[in-house]
Image (cartoon, rainbow, N blue to C red; front, top):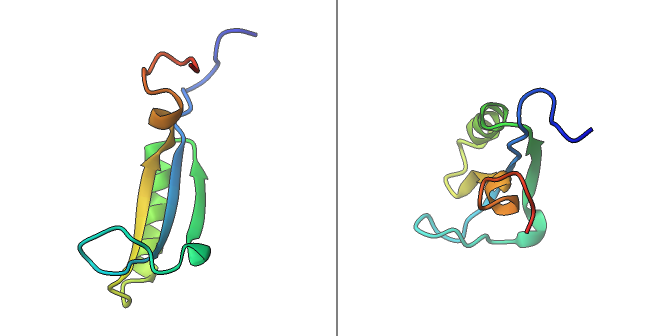
Amino acid sequence: MSEQEGPQQLLHLVFGGELEDLEHTDFRNLEELDIVGIFPNYETAQRAWKAKAQSTVDNAHMRYFIVHMHKLLDPDGDGKFG
């Protein structure tokens, strides 16, 4: 089947970790990064990000991020690799 059925997958990665300082995105320990998951769209990724960010609010150096994986996989936005 060549045509996609349903909504387009726009994959997003949610991850976080403790930063060295609050002005940069250098992590204290890469081995302790928290990979929350990969989500099929921005809305579900944002909900996961918000839940994790709120659960670590007492640690000022802990930060969570949303990576738009679909933009890395398909930078032209044409739905094709390469």
